[in-house]
Amino acid sequence: MTSITTTCRDISELLPAAQTACRLLFQECFKAGIKNIFITETYRSQERQNYLYAQGRTRPGQIVTWTLDSNHKSRLAWDIAVAPPRNLYDISTLSKVGAVAKKLGITWGGYWQAGNYDAPHFEIPLNWAMPKGYKLEGQVIVPSNSKLKVQLFVEDKPKEKDDDVMKFTNPTTENAVRDYIQQAVYKNLIDKSWLEKFDNGTMTSGDFEGLKIIIQQRM
Image 1: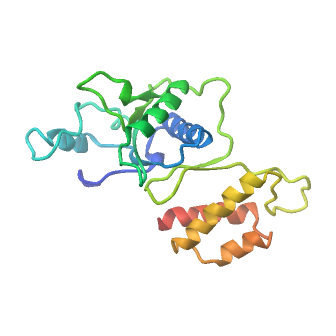
Image 2: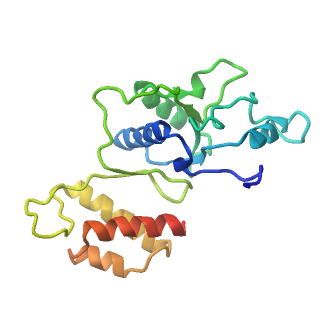
Image 3: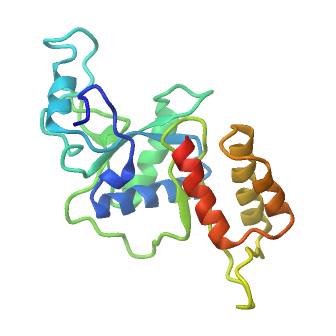
């Protein structure tokens, strides 16, 4: 059993609709140039909610939550923060994310009234559906720490079906994929042979999917 002091940052612990909504939010933030945000909490047990509610009330510390009945425990909510050099809860950045969320039918806690105000918090209703005109356009990297930036990988379909080597017609996409691999090398999450494989033009789609799994496991 997970300790009440342990924070869960895994979006796979959310309900499927909330996972989709979260990925869509990060995708649209990426497209809007907001790439310095990351997940700080997803699912929260009732026991952990009780523990957090006690802080600043019956337990020392500042008050961090106003409710015992959070949608975190319903697997419909997630919290985010802002990476350095910005402040962890930089309101300018969070407000921009909140504006994006509003277009997607995602509730932002920054719009709640005083007393309930919760700028890092986002959630969806149980009946949430993706708004018309939106779709997940590719692989969305949703960081769970401040070391990585939000990324969106849209793989171009190869003209030929004779092999599975990654091919790009969009230089921006190619540069984004290379930057993602290079960052992982710099952080010693993978060895430089992966970057050489990419630069040699021999990396396949399967290679890249496996590489992403390795990186996530070693973060």
